[in-house]
Image (cartoon, rainbow, N blue to C red):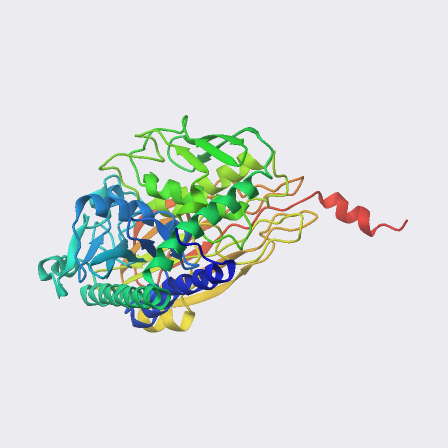
Length: 519
């Protein structure tokens, strides 16, 4: 059995990790929509020939953690040749929510499949009852857009036009098809770089690398998890909904392994905060990533020490045809905080809660769709204040620049600034949220999916809570505070103001006062 020297293993690690980064740059440069080319709401990764994660770019956690489920489903259902590409968005077939469209391309070398290039991008619209395909009031999956099971989009190097025509049924079809072609091109580029890299190092060393890098990541992860005191931990949280929706986890840490059981969480709801299994798993993987050193390479071996049990039919593992659009963006955030809460007894240095929501804002009509996730406050920690106005945890996008927003859409930005004083007080203060105020210049429809509008992110070690978020409609009669999840028509000249939550504070304020008193 071939063994690689430590130096060659390191060189190969960086060479293969560069591939998904190259794919992401290609996708960003060639995409049509501001959602991808400006906000970079996309993610790329490469896998081995047997479907194991090999390397991923530093993109969107909720995309990346769910990708292995998509590839696993495709490998069981679809045969792919060297020039094929498969498309899917079905949350019950490895997807996350319908706007996230996944493209998968095999990489062949000497007539054998040696890997896969995969990317996932959030499309501003995929059909459904409302522009943006993320209604605040959806109850069934079909209301949220067109469901695409794993199917060939390219076969033998040729476009399957019957499948491409699916995107013509969505709003802004030319933009949809432009983004899809950008995704196809990114995978083509990834496959080419993958093949060149294997040829550069040789097939024998490539196979040795895939084995050794995963074993090494597993070893390093186990060593890191052993620093967590062995024991049983638990936590309970809830979602803002018309009825109580509980999230529960029991966690057992033993000798560098972590077992998580989400039994006791509420059953799936008649609404869209259900999180598909791949989404819940992605939140788990993200938390594990936060617990281990930055220099551990992320691949399938990294997560071997983790066991997860999620009952079927619960809000974190729903069954078809439950709606899931907010489960991807909102419930995933709450799962992260749930797991951190469970671990605080063992790891008291875990930061205070961040904003705990993605503040999804969708404004559109049959002619345009604007979609944005809006940053907020990060939680403070023992090291210092929380960051202001950032995306936290499961999202990692940029914003849409004001100039782009106003040029691309019939919208005007009235104000866009930090929400001063919204971070929780404490020895270290939570980060401030953001205020985004937008006027619509034509009749359209508004959808908002958010959380943390009833209670603010909690502070830790005596720190204060961050301010709750607010969704405010400004119409002809004045200001109206909206619920966490809404879907309403807007008239020309009306405004929507999103005030995002601040992060929780860390430590008692009295400690600050004590420190400044004369001795």
